[in-house]
Image (cartoon, rainbow, N blue to C red; front, top):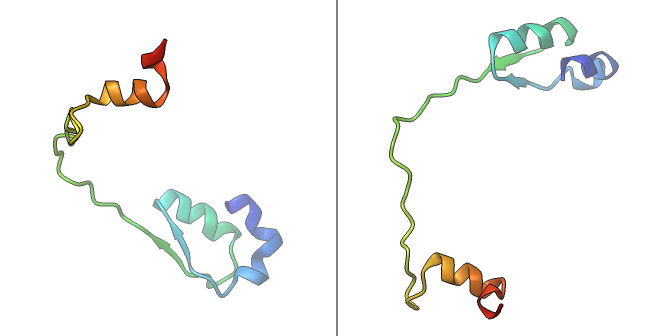
Length: 77
């Protein structure tokens, strides 16, 4: 993104840029208009939770595999 800023500098001067890291902020700031507001978003990692387990049978009594096979007509081969 930083490489595209010089051509649009004046048109984007009133916008706030949100970036993912200080390194990216520095790159954008070097190309942005003077005084351009650039904010670094910090992501909080969620505690590791086990993946959700999908039920193997829906209310019709089919397994997921059977449902996929039926949808793709693989059960008729």
